[in-house]
Image 1: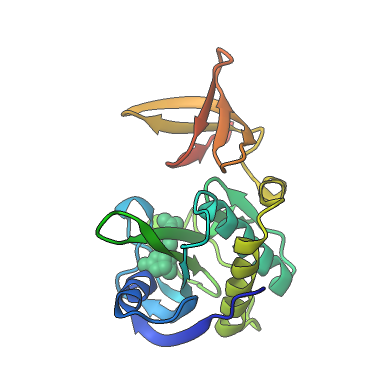
Image 2 (image 1 turned 60 degrees about the vertical axis):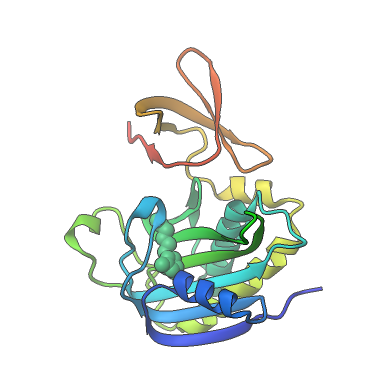
Length: 236
Ligand code: BTN
């Protein structure tokens, strides 16, 4: 059975993830999708802000009572990539964990946040997605890394619906999600750097394990599985 979501549209919000959390706390029916044309306080991962003007900013809030949440970020990346491919025909790549790339530039970021009760139990998850749909001008510090989907005829609402529907299907049908993720990975077989306990390491990305972790092998053939964090792709 496919869940039917309720959609809420806004011109401007502080953050669609924040709005989703407020509405969950008010007790709205889930799943629900919050879509804004711009955000005044868009959040990225690791406390960063997310440039939020000219794109699609949306959050899908889902009840997690009957779901396993381990693979949520992996599922989200695959769903967004598949929805973009189906609506635009563009082939996109996934940079671990869940950044979406087109022609070497990041066109979409995903921020998953848990909503827990006082005992710490996760009751809902908010999957926040920012797609640079037709963004032409980026702040200077983003110019070299950020790109846009540039699909002028694709309406925000259409892409939002395609992403939310794909997410709801993929959240139920997770069987081959890792292979669909791997098909689109832009990091496998590449040299990457990552940080652990304040140290920077270089290794080769060799696999994605069944929990969405990135398997890397260093110069001494030591294997490490990264379960979260940021990696940088080395260019040489
Ligand atoms: C990242 O790349 O660091 C993740 C960015 C996630 C941005 C989206 S935009 C919609 C939702 N609302 C937010 O405040 N953040 C997410």
